[in-house]
Image (cartoon, rainbow, N blue to C red; front, top):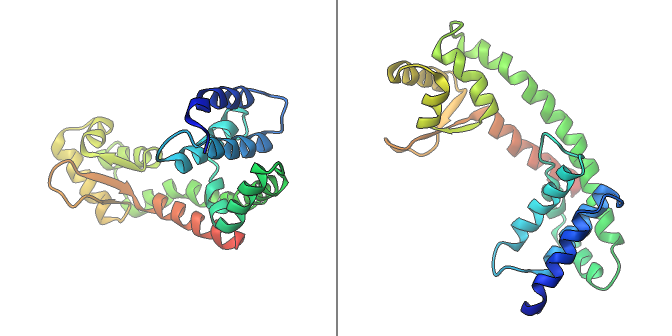
Amino acid sequence: MSAPERVPEFMDDLLAYLNRDDVPALMQAAIAHAQFELIHPFTDGNGRIGRALVSASLRRRGVARHAVIPLASGILARREEYFEALGLYRSGDPEPLALLFMRSAQVEASESRISIERIKARPEEWAAQVKARRGSAAATLLPVFYDHPGMTAAEVEAHAGANTSAVYTAIARLEDAAVIREITGRKRDRVWVANDLLAELDDLDRRIQAAMR
């Protein structure tokens, strides 16, 4: 953890590094992550922010423009190795950390391709499950849940473009077909999620961790 009075200086230096374009993108993300963790600028949440920083760095460099690369899943599967690599980075040796990031990126790229193919097939599978009439509120909501896997009641109504009665009839139809489910258990301020999409993300995380162990 940095001395509090030096945190602004270190963060300015980190931002300057993150804005460079002459460093390999994955190496830049790994070093930026490690440096942020060593600076440890906040009393809580540094790990989460440091992991988010990896995704933000890769997105800025154009490596991942339309998706978040779940590097943290692979890295945290080897937690002891990760913390050891951070310690070695602190002592001036970035190679173990870089190698861990590269291995994680390879595993995640491979496993993510499987998930992408499965997710691409969902709209057709959902349509077959629901058998909704074209132009109906149920048919309208299928692609909406594909793009927004979690939505509140107000969001569902806004996207459906139908009266309240038709919207809730459509929601019931999607629930009966097991396309979506309600996760709050409340009568008000309810939230529905797309079952298959969230399950696929969970499965992706499990596959990544298993491949890294």
